[in-house]
Amino acid sequence: MSMILPRTKLVAVFAAALTLLMAGARGAANAQGQEGPRLDFPAGLATDGYALYVASGRNNTIGRIDLSSRTLSIAAGQTFKEGSNDGTGASALFASPSGMVIVGGDLYIVDTKNSDIRKMNLASKVVTTVAGTANISGGQDGKGPVAHFNLPSQITSDGAGMLYISDTYNNTVRSFQLSDAMVKTIGGQSGVDGKVEGPATESKFSLPTGVATDGKAVYIADTGNNVIRKIELPSLQASTIAGTGEEGRQDGPGAQAQFASPKALVITGTTLYILDADNHAVRKLDTTTNQVSTLSHLTGHLGSGVALSSDNHWLYVSDTTENSVQQVDTTNGSFTALYPP
Image (cartoon, rainbow, N blue to C red; front, side, top):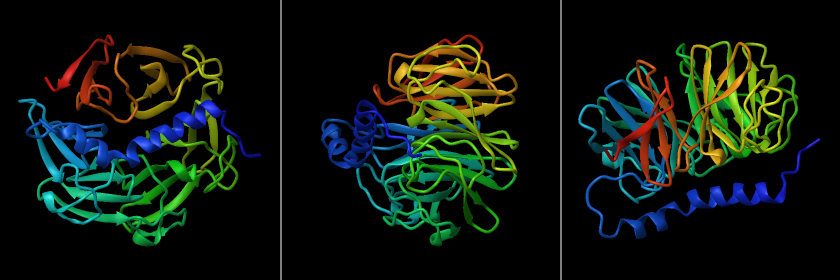
């Protein structure tokens, strides 16, 4: 049975979508009087240990923050110019880019409003479209441009040639094989909203956003259901591991824990970090016990992007209220601004 979201949740969901889809006009207005590179609605984050790459959703650019100097430069895209062109650096155009992940020397980017997946070579800044076709939404599986997405949001890598993508407005989770560009649906039913456990042919999700993997399972922030789910690999069996489904901020065993619009995820070892957006909190989930705890509370609005430093000491978090990136100490939960410094 399909789940019908409460009216308040629907309002929040559509308001978030409108924020992205109206990005260009509002961003241009906010640009007046500002000079130089800047963040505007920072979303996805990814790091190679030397720099932190930031998808600036309202700017339609991919920024690069040097972790030593804390200076920002634009790696690709043009500020406030929306499009889908492939090319090098400023010749490439994006439309509300979001989730990102680095694999080898390439940065994979979820280009949300274009409903496709882009790749930027970190050395050459050459951008290409590797899956989906710009401005053609759908739920089809297939290779490269044959596959279609519907406002996807986040992406992760298993480190062994497979990417996983939250295809948010299709209510599905997709896999993308790097070797042949094959896209497959591994969870959820395209265009059907719900909360159903089981194999890929039966499971249902509601506006999944955050996605992370340890190679044994894919973890999903099932945002519309306020729960954390996982899809076992390779069986593709979906189950709920934390959250009652009711909005709240309760820590504790997975079956008792509560979230309020959980979004971006990142994992290291057996620790899954969860940006619990409407609670303005960074939560932790132990994947061996499903125990949930709170690491930190931030004053801004988080949820659109998260990444771990190469030594796992810092958790980088996008803050869309302050148009900044915060860094959270994973040992004690204290936080400071990374950019602007």
